[in-house]
Length: 593
Figure 1 (cartoon, rainbow, N blue to C red):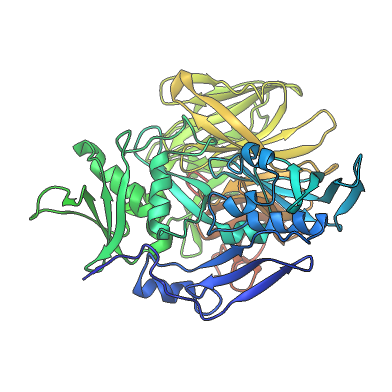
Figure 2 (figure 1 turned 180 degrees about the vertical axis):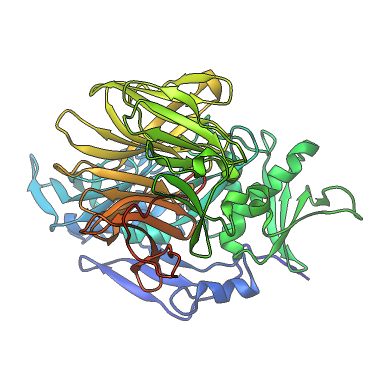
């Protein structure tokens, strides 16, 4: 049975009226019942019919005060059911209504004081100023970027036959965080990495279209390409100019109807992009069929069917399953299995206290480590007879990091104001173009498992440390790092001790005060946990490990228990006890962690 769900959710049974400065400037109606039933319950019967909260804007009244007009204008800007903002324009003078551009971006604003009114040159002109804090911005490409700082927002109003109207105001939308949550979808778009062998998540906000289902809105946004943060860093399997005809359900599948086919070698990558992008909306339980202009992709007897987990099969790092971590003990590298360590094969598994900061390559085939004097990064295969070989030498190197392409990353610091990012494969070393880092002191650099996002810890001339996330573009000698933005800002003398990627979206940050932070490019860093003595961290999907030292200098690896929100000792000794011991477990490391 075919079910079209453009917006056939029916009337809501509940309306909540928001009063705005004494006026009925807007009302919020949960369409489909966001406040009544859970989203999961809705999706079990229809994965495309996600509920949304309708904000119904009203036109200004001639007897409203200038302050009420400004408040009403802000409410009208948040109306999902008025995507052209026609009602909002009624709050403007005829001349300004022609100039105002609501499509130039969104400022997420928290008003902290009552509006301040200042009389103009005559009785028919006033300025109403809002005082508050900018918490984020949403670009035209949908990129949500946390921000900060106070800002005054002035609105100039003129009084005419219709009452007060706004004659001057900033372009774009001025919305509260609640407005953004109601009016925009949080969407993870999936694109291909530079080698077209993995997937990269692009987190964006997509305006809700009340005439369309959420899946259709999301696929349309996917076809437009990545946000500015990932431009030139990722690829798409879809042919240029591909448009979406429709998205609907039929025979317990989500049907995506496109206007163009792709080359045969791009069918699997295209399927992975769609499955990943729609996974959250369909909750991973609905399969897909891809059609072109209403017809089966291949033929009536051979449709293109896509499994709900196609994205995880295409890129195993999206759902890595059981991956055993590694750690150091008395200078030897061991792999943890069933809470006990087993020495790895080759020289890396022998006791040797001359190297630190182990980094494990993709699939655990090689280990890289930094010499204690910080001048050499060596690599050893984890095979029988595997020998240590120097790969990179320098003045003062950062701990090594592998990417998914089997290349090694480190940074050479010739002085406190000179850093060169280096990338090395089996045959050759390359200098990475990173102009924003050249004159800084880079303390650490780690590439995410998607091969595109990169995290960097830097120290400025005031000995302040911060964490930035950027984008890797290109391969070999054409590699460059761009779009660096701060995710953990400097905080006095706070130091950053370690960083670890959870996945392609989230970075864990360990501070010198033993605080553990969770950071990303789309949200403010938040504190997770603290434990005195933590020295290093590593993470993979839902697993978070830490190397820790107790007051007596004994060592152990800890595991974060998400259920109890506590750190627990992990590695057991020969007696089956997981305790801190001298020269014990330290420096845990997941592959590509």
